[in-house]
Amino acid sequence: MLIHPEINPVALQLGPLAVHWYGLTYLAAFGLFVWLGRLRLHHAPFASIRGAHAWKTQDVEDILFLGVVGVVLGGRLGYCLFYKPLYYAAHPLEIFAVWQGGMSFHGGMLGVVVAMLWFAHSRRRPWLQVADFVAPCVPTGLAAGRVGNFINGELWGRVADPDLPWGMVFRGAGDLPRHPSQVYQFLLEGLLLFVLLWLYARKERAQGQVAAMFLLGYGVFRFIAEFFREPDAHLGLLSLGMSMGQWLCVPMIVGGLGLWWWAGAQSRQ
Image: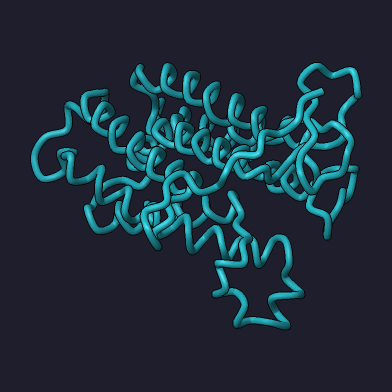
């Protein structure tokens, strides 16, 4: 049995300025996106696009900016709608109290989808082409976020078998060992999904299939990880013994399979 290390959430204190580890993981996520995005510019089909619709470094930076806005707005609104709709319907002004915490990945993903739709429209590019460009660059950012969750000792896992060698006691979660679900998600939704998606995207695919594989891969890996993650206290387990996170993954998995099939059928016409 392990004890979660008491890591100071403040990485660097410069007078009144406090730099938090969680903020640094966000910076790492942004930096990795820009680096991977620039590599994607040299991959098919983007490297072969010429003329007014040619992909440039500026596009990577613009997508990052719009994506950050989409993540923040979508993540907050998604949390309010998916996890506490009645509470925020009664206290609508608290929707803007982001300092109180409360973000949803699935809501953030919807926000990013809207941001990509705006980018595609403004640049007159096919939306699925933009989605295919972005998808392989996302999992490393998710991995960085899970590192931040682990450092903060939040979003811990369910109670584990006492004999589990890596079972961990988290502050504020009682004295029983738990699954370090942040690490599981770092490995599954972050590193493994990145490797598989990056390799899959290196070959030219039907437009939309890379984005489809992201939806499918994340949905499956998150669904698995949710078996080890403690459900939200105010929700618990829902129908069929599944958590809210798992239920939100179901449309991702179905949508990913459907998009992959549809994109392949379109390319054969």
